[in-house]
Image 1 (cartoon, one colour):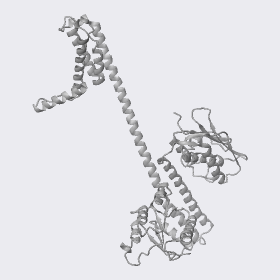
Image 2 (tube, chains in turn purple, brown):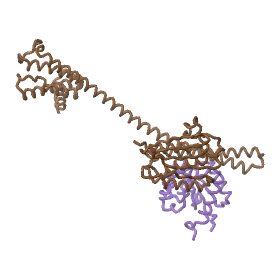
Image 3 (cartoon, chains in turn blue, orange):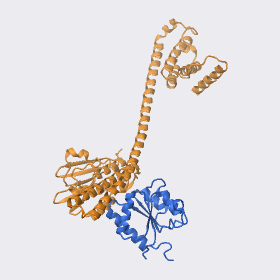
Image 4 (cartoon, chains in turn purple, yellow):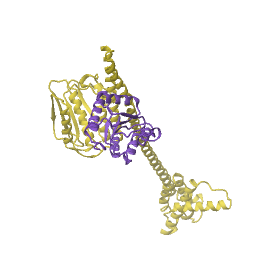
Length: 149
Length: 379
């Protein structure tokens, strides 16, 4: 049930973290197209297909979202809330990727409807490990909305 | 009541004076207090006239309480004023010839007058002194309370600062580690052994700094989270800690339980952290062929339970004993005794501080160390 067509949307402000993420994706052989938004407002524009993403095929609907919490401007928490309160977007699984492992952050995210919460590892080996699990679980094992059609 | 009456009269007079443009009254203060004394003395005089005829003597019987009340309400000068007023009234009314005042009359009853005068003075002085002392004490208490609130706010800010700072530090740290990894993966054939070693060192140091910031985070979080005060089964807490430590493969160590640990008031999770750190340290810093760690409760003081963790490890030199609780202070090189960040005992101390308890140690270098702690001040 490997789905290589699903778009993975990465919301990440740090260029360095994004480079590490793409590298880890390459390593684990993730073939899905990757799209990146570097702040919360851009992510919302992408999801609502407005602003710079208003063209018909500029922002294809992602199959899964990797969301950083601490973003400049509109915060990752607000993006999460927006996604999970929108009837058209709430079905998209959101995996929160954050430096923080503070109880408050974890609790708030799950309350807001996050599908998973992962702490960003400092080590590239661990990051690759994390990405392997994400790929296996979310893109291979799990059945997602729209899969059965 | 009387006070309110005088204040009312004063205000009323102020109103009338303002309307008819009389010169303004002196400030309500000393004048108010003197008026109050006069009123009290007048009431005392009426009371005296009611209880006995003029000729009965007893000229000061009601004036003593009046003077006392005057000092309590109006302070030192009100008391002195009331005393002088009392002497004048007594001489005028109660000392023959009645309803006349002359220095001669004063002489005829000199001793009672002297007693009243000196008593008035003593009462005025001592009540005023007591009042001032109390005020000073109240001021100090208020200042202490204010500074406590201020210190709490500063500490909270400091914790927040530490939290944010250590968070933001981790991002570039992750970058450094990642790029070092890229370098190793992509350019390893261009680097010789020494170069690869340098890259490994960069990674190792980044990882070390990451665990240091983690400890800093944990420490700052301790300051801002609430410490629960519940009855905790300490034996069960230690059992759980030992289970965790055994699964971490601390082999070849004999764990002894000296006696029942009983229960204590506190936060079970935090108390577990205390034991976890102390027991892990006891097991780690040990170079004996037969290693043991003893956990027990010392009830010799009978006041509050004292828990202890004892080992036959390397011990702590006397001159180092004061600094073991300092954050990131390590007594040994990083690669000795299994390494560590040097934050464990600092966190232990903060947990115990937050509980209101104490921690101290006894140690003989080469023979072993005992850490003692309490979870309340014992007041």
